[in-house]
Amino acid sequence: MSDDGRDEAGGAVGAVETVLTELRRRILAQEYPEGSMLPSQRELATSFVVSRDTVQRALGELREEGWIKSRQGSGSRVVIKVPQTTSAADDTARIRREGMSWFVERAFARAEVRLDVFCLTSESLDAHLHMQMGRILASPALVPEKIRLRMLLPDRGMSLPVPRNIDARDDKRVVERLLAISDRCLSSLENTLQNLRANGPVKELDFQVRRVPVAPMFKLFLLNETEAFQTMYVLARRRIPLGGTELVEAVDILSVGATGTYFDTVDDVDDAQSAWVKDQQEWFDSLWEHLAE
Image 1 (cartoon, rainbow, N blue to C red):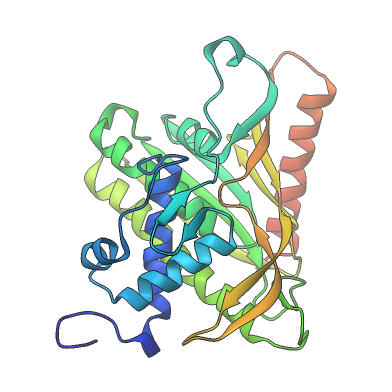
Image 2 (image 1 turned 45 degrees about the vertical axis):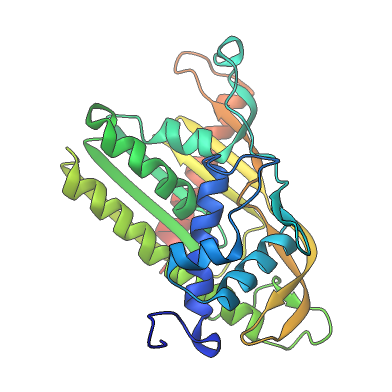
């Protein structure tokens, strides 16, 4: 850190991710809605207490991910479209397209939350739950009394298909960067859950993470064994920063702002949709019990 409390360029990888996480959260929460301008780099640097270099690198990554567009001298504009909540007329549909923020808000408005998650990293859930935390703590009646979250992540020792350096497929640094981001988000997610327990009426909290030798190409969320939300990972070519000024061309996944398909079951209806949700739950349970460590 420099004398004024700002991060030095050479050691700002963690600071970049902190700025990225918060900017994504603000965009998802529509504090910066589609079409709006982000604060200036100087304002962001002051707000986050980081260097302008760190802000520039965070904004560069947001551009590569398709969240913003920037023009020299004109600032950065939000271009990603955040999925909106389904209208009341469609709210009874048992299968529909939704944004992940809608599903997370729906899940954590229950008195009891039993959420099973299978994904590549914990980044999206961390971002969306952090976005909901303020709303939940401001309305204690909506805070769950019981939370059980089981998360399956890929084994750290396995070879992941993405991200992949296009020019050097054996370059492990892009994967190591992904794992470091996942670790930070996992820690942040746990802190958020502990905060909900410490500052709300959450009486029981059970958070477990296990790893499997499987690399998912989708995110699956199973809620209370009766609802499911699934979104596919979309592959895209983008530049990944590796520290300092180094950028590499890579194939990576983009999913934080993605929409997904929501499925609901009806207890007294034995149809294909209900059977699919039950099959997904049985599949998750089998991985958790027999393959995960």
